[in-house]
Image (tube, rainbow, N blue to C red):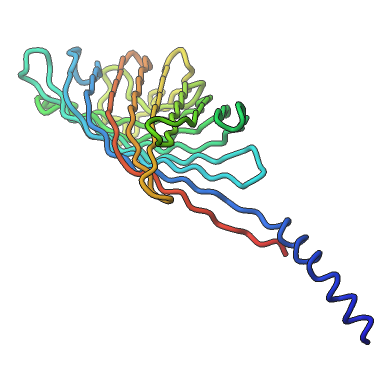
Length: 268
């Protein structure tokens, strides 16, 4: 009996170490940002005029990654609202959209972990509207699409004035997807009340519906857990389907905070 107790006492540290090395830690980084900037809208279903104005954006960016693994998960919630006017400053449109981005990125650590490169893809689901306050017939246009977007990102950690800063750039471009659109001259009454389908769900590619989205941020640590984040978000969306041309360009200067925390999953 004494030998068994002695053996158990000797093996206990090694068993504990093996269990600890089997544990996995998930590092979660979440940023909450508000952005202000310009918006440019064209939708020939509502008007042939170009509209320009000002908009606001809320952006939540979350990245999850387990230690020792190279794949990370990206989740973004983006909500936009803009008020734009035509060149004569007589007509007004309201534009709004919600975008959900989810995807996976593979990483490479370079330059003694100062440089981090990532590549992968995101899926973007978007719902929105454009409302023309001057139109009596067909005053509004619904927006809905689902896109697959190849994505690359890079971040670089450096010191400036004895402060550690992290600069990050992320770029996504549309590859293919599907989009809702009325046909040219078709009313929403025909679609939803009379049920007259006329190629209203259209497959799209980077040719018929190109999109280029870029996000640039700089992080400056305030405390061990909270970081100030400033940046720029630009999104160039275009489409030409069912004889209707549409583009929505948004430019936003961002400011917000980033929080990093860890969750430990214990091995059984």
